[in-house]
Length: 121
Ligand SMILES: [Fe+2]
Ligand SMILES: [Fe+2]
Image (cartoon, rainbow, N blue to C red; front, top):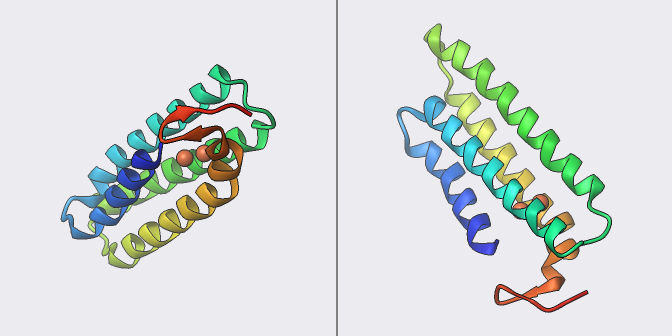
């Protein structure tokens, strides 16, 4: 999971270097979704408690990203300048990922695993 967090982070930051970032944002959103699915599978497998808000946070972030993506795709079609928007997407997404990992991932299941092994509640 730590590796996935790092990969997601890098993928978001890498958008800055891309000339096709609006299109690539779709791939990043898919990767975020896959990560959340993997995390939620662990919740179920190890019956980790109190994960309702955690799941809601995942859902809300995905919904925000998807909405942003479709808005930006429309603007992109209309050939608007999106450089400020790119900055905004990268900043807000990395900020969310950091806050979420610290507030939810780490305290909720980080303590149940060590070096990728389940060590119990
Ligand atoms: Fe999470
Ligand atoms: Fe996570």
